[in-house]
Length: 432
Image 1 (cartoon, rainbow, N blue to C red):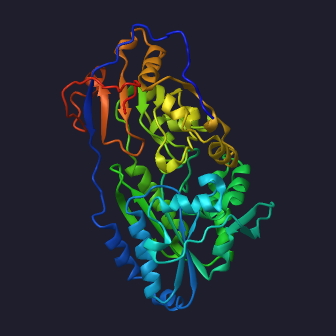
Image 2 (image 1 turned 45 degrees about the horizontal axis):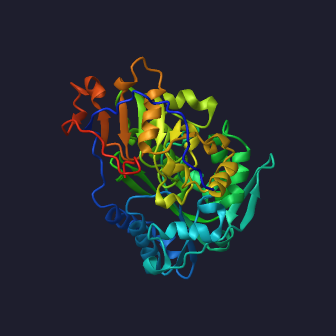
Image 3 (image 1 turned 90 degrees about the vertical axis):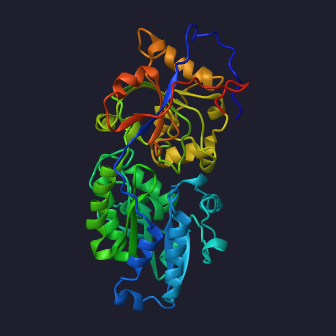
């Protein structure tokens, strides 16, 4: 679908784009020096009984859709260790409805991270077929990827982070990998059909049933730092599965970065994407969520943000701009990259229709920014507090308009690192 440039009456007369400064936000540095070495060290300490059970066994390893630091290196280390133990490992996509909810699309999605058979030295088996492994007392079905179910065991590997729609002791992590990822499109659609009000408790009871019917050899959970590295990585025995997932979720909330200004009139986000957040941009950062009933909890985590402008969709997201519905304006580039089939599949599966809503679109980046400034609720739009970030994972280095300087002065966790400058636009009035 092609969206034309709009022959619209100018609604931005008198708008002057502000001078900007580069700003460095400082967060506690808890980066794990060598995550792969840490993984290998922990694998060497796996109990002898578990290791002795593995020779000749087919073991599947989950691979999710999110971009992760050292992703392919960690996966290879897992595969290599399993082979050293005499097992026959394979990797399988565990990402619900992402990548178009097709087996080929999900395998291709992993390949862009370097997760492929050539690099790993093991098969990457992708299917959308599932097996119903259990049914809860109230009729809630529990699904498992067919290849994984037919294996002798699986290893759950996933990033653990706050969820984009609800708050609980278990959010996005190992339990969600079972319920949404390993359940594939059918499992994800079924799980979301039961609603977000009991999402957390449902994660627990579905995972409990799953663990009774599928052999989880062990799990690997990791938490990211505000600098988009790894804060901790942990090999988790299955008898400590729930305890450690909750503990790592608490750690993830402590590690989450923030936009530290108290108010932002216009937030410009260069890119959103599925490898960044399930909602393209993280509501824990923007304060905007698809769930009206949860909006207060998310707004409490973020500064007040009047308008949000989106400029692009990451290449890794392949046109899936799900999440744009909580923004206010998107660029011409953005709207013409949207793959509506992918967006709709994702949002229908998640029962999150608002995430697929199309905001106003502008004729260029410059037009989008000017529209946002002109139509924020400000007596003097040219004094707007404007902030630009690359995405909601990368918040250490940002750009702020000079009108933000009074909010930055005197802080020891925000440092201005440049002289004031003006943006340079190309012949199409875009920033790049």
